[in-house]
Image (tube, rainbow, N blue to C red; front, side, top):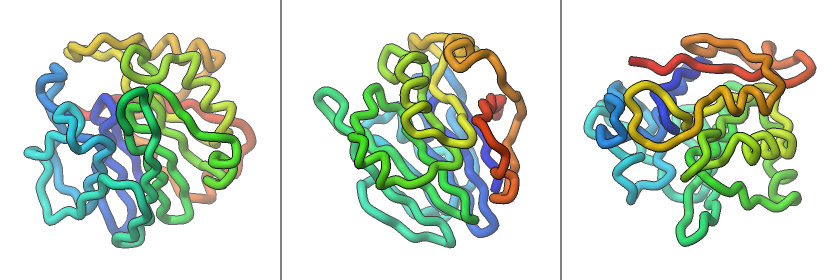
Length: 208
């Protein structure tokens, strides 16, 4: 499996049989929208144009945007509706190649009870927003990490060059997590790579 980052809550996840793209953002963000071919397109808030700019995505993709469970090309995706003040945002559990990814997309409040967290089972990779304002703050994201206890953390939705949204810098979350990190342009791993103890903070360089 390989994971790459476009920016905001948009990722490209490549498995043996499928390419998944999540939340392709609109040019109104100030960033160049994601482009590429997908087999599965995951939208956490389809009715919000900022996170559903699909014009740059090609291929005969299957669109996932509702809560529920989907099985496509060796990938199981479970949509989890999370209440956010006056609306819902869908988080997604993505499972393939025996690796389990929880993507908290662009939520501000996790709003998962302890028993709901337990029902998710062990999470290998946690993708979560950390930039504050309209999404989770660095402090709230750190608490989510402690509650979920993943093996790998990939932060998203933070301040970056050309982005016009008001978000905190990534350094705030890195400091909250103790300062230790690894940086790479893509994360490539197999299940056997996840046997080490402890939590890794992986910073992905955005694709451009």
